[in-house]
Amino acid sequence: MGRLDGKLALVTGAASGIGAECARTFVREGATVLLTDVQDEAGRALADELGHAASYRRLDVVSPEDWAAAIDELRQAHGRLQVLVHNAGGGVPRDDLEHLSLEQWRRVQALNVDSVLMGTQAALPLLRASGEPASIVIVSSVAGLIGTPDLVAYGSAKGAVRILSKSIALHCARKGYPIRCNSVHPGFCDTPLVRALASQSRDPDEAWRHLSQVAPLGRLGTPQEVAALVLYLASDESAFTTGAELVLDGGLTAS
Ligand SMILES: NC(=O)c1ccc[n+]([C@@H]2O[C@H](COP(=O)([O-])OP(=O)(O)OC[C@H]3O[C@@H](n4cnc5c(N)ncnc54)[C@H](O)[C@@H]3O)[C@@H](O)[C@H]2O)c1
Image (tube, rainbow, N blue to C red; front, top):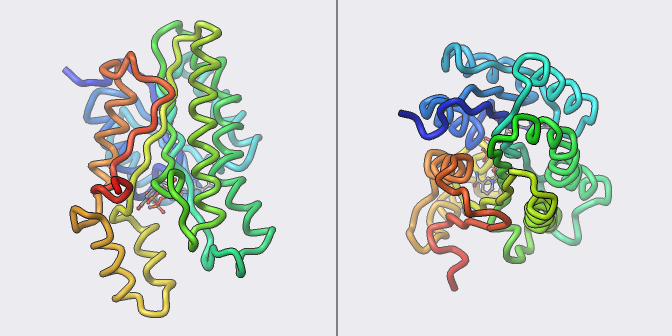
């Protein structure tokens, strides 16, 4: 028996890294999954690999029209949605106070924060539709918990979704909706995003070594470890957990 048997899930940014691993894990645990991304080829290839329980559609998370169309497709095809994972996100190079432009700041807020607001607003009626327990999981970051001089826009956005997550959780609880919402806060994990971050630095090998060892546990996290936590929050095993922020960072924020 799977931990998500019978559940319908939508994962954003599912073509790569953590989102792809969430999609794999969800299908393995019995869910039907709509993978969404802007990398259509990779998203479609993964959905094909995962078989009949998975499908792919393009969803640019900064587009209200894309959100409306994706939710409409789910409504017509299934009439329900039990799991929504806001995973798509990212930053910009040279994200420090003296290099960051206002245009870049706005782009990062749109990708990491506006997307979560828009997507949650668009999906809420469908998440409520079946009356069954539903779960929203927001992939934030340790950068949303502590200040980082090189992640000014990104950290601010990840901090904003931390509180947005709690506000969504409390709104749904107050209204009596059977919808929970929680955020997860990974430290550095081995994904294309972090490899790109290292490759943009002046000494990519040294940057990679540093990122790999910065956590007290002395290694990077894996997308599988993040997906396992997202799975817990998506499943009914976490039925009493809402408005929480769960950290997996190898001890990075412990001191
Ligand atoms: N990897 C880490 O160390 C780490 C740590 C903390 C938080 N995170 C967060 O985890 C999430 C996933 O990151 P990842 O490391 O797997 O990165 P990744 O680059 O491997 O995957 C991100 C995915 O999001 C997609 N995406 C980007 N912009 C999009 C848009 N506008 N609409 C839809 N999809 C879009 C990309 O195409 C990609 O497939 C992000 O929110 C990231 O901020 C990652």
